[in-house]
Length: 433
Image (tube, rainbow, N blue to C red; front, top):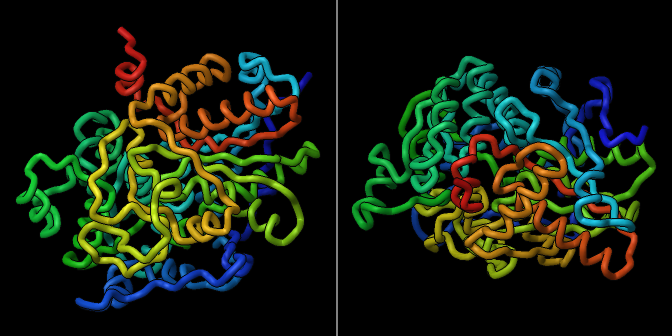
């Protein structure tokens, strides 16, 4: 029997997260204070989890995963399997190209976001916090943090980008079942939200606006702390569990990927699978290429400028050196709203600047994205999230290109979540009656 699932046992779950900072080709440009206004560094120290900020600045290559977090990882189904996409290969007519995918959809909330959510909730509890505040775009991060808060008996307040809040009613229900308070962003709960609505009462919202609201809520409510689901270094460190497992899984079958692909908005799932492999490339241990799949609604790595910018619309954060489209930019809503962020993570941006990461952006009508998802469903038998389908689209495109060129190639896609709560989007985009 040909095995298409490559699984690890519980005893093979990594005991340390990987931090790529010591292996970067140059020192990561540090955060900067803007020329005017209060200290943003002091602000973050007040509203964020101290242990996460410590990890943010860490120069240690390996960071131990506390036993309690490893127990939570096991509880939510880690390690997760790697699959050989044999049925998809057959549909595509591939003979020389082998396709693999990592299944991050198998978490209790349906995405990779739980990997950092449970870590941040654990550290917040240890620091005596009672409430987690955050933003969410597609809803995956908000659901993951609500899940983590429920496991650790914490409150959770979520500011959800309005354009998605209005149509993802089932995911909203799931967040509320987990005990979270969920507000449409921009909201009337914060000064930032009120200012946006005063200028544009019909604002569709954005991750940049919702981040500002989550930060402001943490600042103004005692016992609250702000949690971020992407972009910052500590998030990428926690997400490295994905790539560390995948390294072991490829070793088990004596296979080496030539290309790793992930969708990218801020960079959490892409960094999660890619950074452990990139670290080995930088250390001279392997050869591999890396491709980020984006939307032309927010093509930060494709059309952005590498410069210092704020991470949020309200300018609460320090200035971070990133590929950015500008923190005030208005971006057209898309169904894969988790990719609609103005900037890429500083670490991802630096690696892009050194041409270690390449990127491609797909049209905002998302037609080819949803078609790729349907092809994947009909071959592999389960429905990926719209965001994850960008990785699938890029994986199919690259596989067909290599096959046409007669090139033998191993491609690995990180599938960050499932699409079972996104069926309305599939019905609309694929014109299903």
